[in-house]
Length: 429
Ligand code: TTP
Ligand code: MN
Ligand code: MN
Ligand code: MN
Image (cartoon, protein in one colour):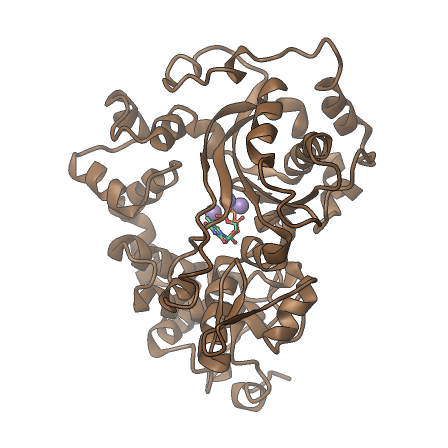
């Protein structure tokens, strides 16, 4: 029997952060169409908070959590997040197999160029629009210009765009996390290293590797990052990157509510950059795609533990042999990428984010850096509207009492928010 929307939606949680949203769901065809409309709205208006894009995001988030495949728009009656525009698109797809509105967007040169240009590290919608106005059609056009803006991210992002636009697979993320754990443990025994971002949500691949670091003793983490970067550099793993200082200020915490819902910016000490991943990190995709390593979804990287995959262990261990080649680029990092990309090489350029959080903020940082982006946006809005609390990656703050609600586990973050614990793999809303 086909579920009726209005008999079901009475029990459907109102907020995305209260619902389970797995990577695999029953309405992929519909959500990918709605996400085209969302992306188009975001690119056109260059404003992540633009209500049109947000409306599409909310609609696709509902579709991702539905326990049945939508067969008729009647089933969507009463879902307040699915408006008339989205219903028209859905009925077009249900009736004709596609939506002409979505097809037209996907075919448009402007959309294709915007997607291509914003795929470059450091290039957002406003830069991409400038490039289009200059008449640039391809990444080669931008490369010919040299370093178009003086931004190191764009210069290096362009020089390695081919590598960086090839998805990072799970085995690469795990191999690199284990090396980060090993080096960090050597510098700071007891360090906590966690692979976060899309990989913690169970995604098989991603656009980068996000790693969150902390230590059970508050302030022990201070000074770790520069040493860690130097150690990774010594192993020949660093191509280019920049450190950002911790800019968290508890004195302004209780002033600005907007900070929590606008954007994803936080104030942690972090390193954003591009690493050199030996090609041996990416295992052959065919026979081994179901191995244990690939199924491991959410973990804190154990110290010096076997990966249950001997070939991956070997390639990690190669880096630790005395004869391991040490890159000269580790000491002084060249800021001119052009010549680096020419020579044949045995590594791939990969985007890496390393984030340092004090333990008092760690579980909030864990939730924030696990995402998804929509999960964060929704949870932050929910906290503000329903609880009068300000949620960020640094904590949950009671603006009246002017005090933080501390958490010593991820579960505790959810219980402070008065929502059932949602597994990371169910946060793909
Ligand atoms: P991303 O790496 O941008 O996204 P992702 O890992 O979800 O997806 P992808 O596979 O494309 O890499 O960010 C990781 C998570 O961290 C994201 O879900 C939201 C959050 N985040 C912050 O909290 N602060 C930030 O400054 C950024 C960039 C992301
Ligand atoms: Mn990521
Ligand atoms: Mn991304
Ligand atoms: Mn990232």
